[in-house]
Image (cartoon, rainbow, N blue to C red):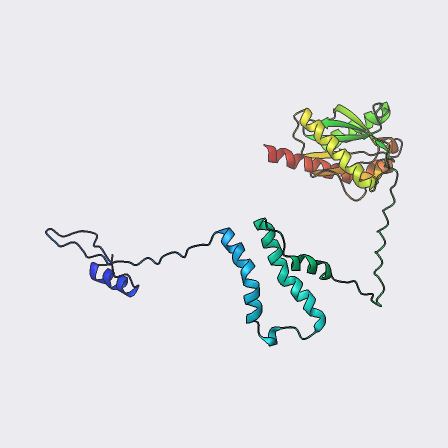
Amino acid sequence: MIADPQRLQYLEAMGIPAWVSRYRLINARPTALSEWEVPAAAEKPAPGQRLHALLETPAAQSAERTPAAMPSDSAAEPAAQGASRAPVARARALLGEDPAPTEASASVFDKPVDTPTDTPAETPAPEAATRERAAPLRFSLTLAVLDQRWWLLLPGGREGLPAPAQALLKQMLVAAGLPGDWRALASLDWPLMETPVDDPLGEARDGLAVFCGGQAMRNALSIEGAIVIPGADAAALFADDTPFEFDCHRWPHPASLLGDPAAKRACWPQLHATGEAWRRASAGAA
């Protein structure tokens, strides 16, 4: 804590001569306060006075100009005169006065004259060619849910998979460690409108993502993953990217595995990876 003598030294060093002690002593004389002289504020002229002053100043300003400040080229004189008369004309218009006769007559002659030039006129750049629009992607998918947690996208519309393919799909789900039963929610037939599009694949992915998000919101589902079994028409949707933000596992079509033991053995790594992801998600949820 700083004592009073040191505080007084700091105040004097900062140029503050008037200092009142925090505590007044008993029977002590009041501290003398210095008189501060506040500079008087300059009177601001009214807007009308400034406009009248603007009308009176051009002649005086032109007389004070030095010869060195004037342009040497005679062709620049009319432009300079017009520039000096422009504020005066605006001031007279604001005051409601008629422009001076000399200003009205000079304004006609002060207009710049277009002189022909030898440079050719710039031709406008041709407009960029519009990108060719293509036909939309066509596919049909059935959206089902596994244990209220994962999507199961099946090929085809409302008719779904044939009975032998459905039986094999149940066996594949059980072998991977997933529930063997699913609940179908809705089917999507794309496109919704027969109109040409700029990006058929991108718009189809966006449409599928919006469709699945709407079904999850409608059924109050919290989706953590997806198993996709696309048909030939929807294979391009999941070729190099997926429309989902969570893990998406692509399985072969069950109909292509019927009667082919080698194909069934080849798809086992995919089933095993899906089962591991399902168990990790279950452990995280617990």
